[in-house]
Length: 143
Image (tube, rainbow, N blue to C red; front, side, top):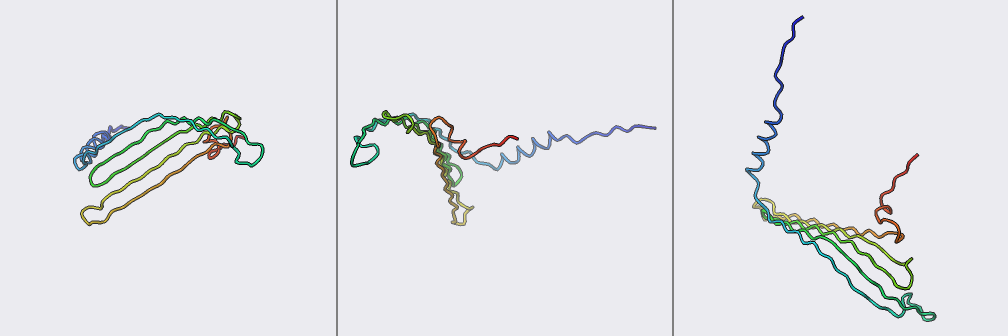
């Protein structure tokens, strides 16, 4: 019984050739990343907005995020993420953590004069300050 040796196709060569062809037709884009951190304080003398039994509170707001701006061949993409933490001085049970993600894109279609726009955003607020806000949307059950 004889064995024949066959040479297998070199997939790496095909992959590199494909990448080279794709990059030959791509144009460079300007990409900017802007990380930021901020904060502030707000004082209210009536946190619950009631007429009797008013309670004051100092609300601290701490936020951090990144803004991304990509500008390329007749189009732009903006992707922004922000994480906020609100801290209440009168009752830590009122503390809130929330996240915001927004996306915006605009692209011209060849030289037809038509443009395509897309916008999307989501705000995620935790149900409790000691929990991750993602757990309110995504949850897993183990059996």
